[in-house]
Length: 100
Image (cartoon, rainbow, N blue to C red; front, side):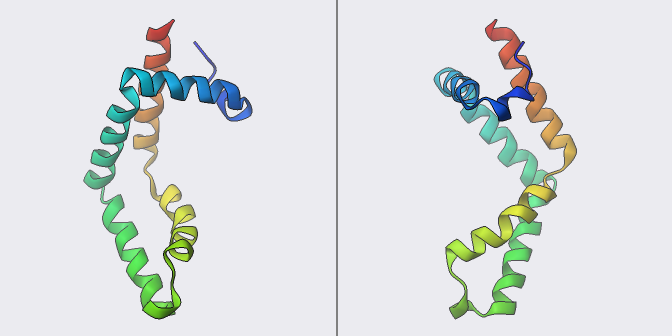
């Protein structure tokens, strides 16, 4: 099985894994699982509230979509529960193990 920590260091390996995920349809299944889990845990609502707060602070006319995305991305990543990350990582590992 591929060492998942090497994926960050090896762009070619990451691209190869991504291609296999796309070709098998597993990438779409994982994306749907992630969407569901994030909605269930309240992540989506938290991020929506954070966006509203930023817009309220800066004013609607002073916020672009690009600025908003740049501002919320780090918080959005930080708010993803560890359990959701672990489950996705486990599913990817399982997929890689089955491919061998």
